[in-house]
Amino acid sequence: MSKKLRLIVPLLLILSLLLPGMAFAAKKSTSTKTTSTTTTTSTVTSSVYDTTTTTPTTTSSSSVILGYYPVDYVGDKTAYNSLANYGSSMNAIATFTYLVDGQGNLTGTAPTDGLTLAKSKGIKTYAMIHNYSNGGFSQTIASSLLGSAAARQNVITQLKTILPANGYAGVNIDIEYINPADRSNYTQFVKEVKDALGPLGYKVILSVIGKTYNDTTSSWGGAFDFNAIGQYADYVQIMTYDEHYPGGTPGPVASIGYVTKAVQYTLTTMPKEKILLGVATYGYDWYSSGTKTVNYLTVPKLLSQYGVTPNWDDASKSPWFTYTDSYSRSHTVWYENAQSTGYKLDLVNQYSLGGIGIWRLGFEDQSFWDAVNSKLK
Image (tube, rainbow, N blue to C red; front, side, top):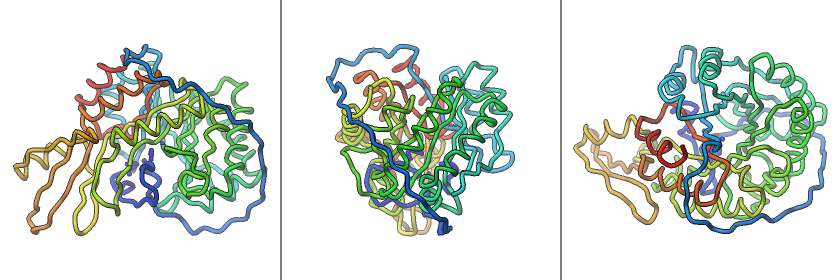
């Protein structure tokens, strides 16, 4: 899931976002491919769920600890190495693998090495389908796909072959930058996927924008009807990151205030055990010429190179620092570390959520997993 920057590669992280608090993927530019649409609607009854705050306790080992597994280029072992080194700390991965087009055709190659390794460790695997094309999430693809009953069925038909052929436990749907006019079509797609795959034993996970209210109009969050999709999906990963983003003003990637509000809103729309909290393993370096992605591995190098001591912003529970590079350019860096991550993991315990979705594998170090193991294992 933003979200999942989503980060597929560092280049995918250098994106822009129109609505604060959106997931990483929600910042990527969109494709201009033109496709046709037809409209399908679905009516769903809304529900309100318990939002009672409880004293933080240790979450049971049944918590879903899902790592997102992208392969950025042929031979890329970044996510694989993370799985090899830290696989004992997670119980699920979703491979960022299959691009869907407007007619519902899926293209992509399953990372067999990663799937084999995951299987050897007893880790469940999910096939992620997405509409990331030509440098961004395509609204045109999303509208054509979601608005066509035939295209939606085409996806389902292919999944019925892809999932068993590769030993996947289910599908992770990551369709983003959806026209809010396609809100009911998205819900219908989720329902159809669950109705078709559920009886076959497959799980359905959604990656959606972390919303703090019932947004029905924005290009990033408007299409996600939490009350509706929460009835059909097995898990909903809320991409609670990119509160500040490339192209915007510097600030926390995921302040504790924003993340808490997103969790509290989501709890009013669906059962708590279905919610996977999006956890980032990255941050951003803003400067006059643009924005770069940083992570658990690169931040220490920057601190050492420029002799900087990081600051801690207690209001947002986030680390940050500034430095001046060799071209006399001023940089401001906000990022995630084990301490800031720990505050987010406390919310999983406090609200008894289903678990976490980590964007992404390969950007973290041992300290991240120490926090996860301490809080959730």
